[in-house]
Length: 335
Image (spheres, one colour):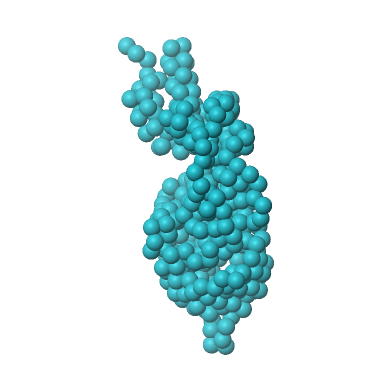
């Protein structure tokens, strides 16, 4: 499922990521609306002929999409409302107006569409865009968790993202990796990994692109009392086999995600997610040693999945790094 290698005119057989390829305006509008929202779509100019396609890769509540209309079009969705889009042209240009901001988007300049602001777009015929969709609720919850308080107003992003800047290049590299890597196709099948990818996309956008809470997020945080870290540690030990994110830990500990991260670094010398990985690895090792000592057959894959690991390749690497041997070596009876 590689969104970067496909083209609208590909004749090499079915594309697993391909949602549709159509020359019909109503069909195109309706199929795009299934992934985004109902909108007005119009072809600009009598000589223009629609030749649209869309690829779609769901990643939990997020998704990465590739969309091209093959004609000059106007798009009127009003406000996106429940989700944010980051549109990255692979070629061509688009005129974007979101709220009071207006830009010409190109392969060097992405557009970040704030969910709560009125939106109007005109895409040039050859404009082929890679589009990331993120849920507004998850985005604002992550921002709130990092700040440690409920957002007093909706989050609003700067419309233009310079993909040649250090911050923009970091975002672009992440999205291109997810759009082209076989890792994403596998990750899409696992709820835990999909959730972690969504969290990574949200955290990267919040930290790398300006918005109305950027200054507050940049303010230094103080090291919390040790009791807050202990709350999170106790929660990890009790729920290690479940999907756990920084937002979940911060809410349970009743402090901001940034404060919790600083507390773990101060008191334990490791990040909260790093500590979670250590706990999971230790639980796997205990299960393998118990099976070995009692002579029971054991399926390492099942043990790892039960401990909360979804990507077994990463699990094996982390296990060897922590214990100096592979899981199978641990499980093998000593002679």
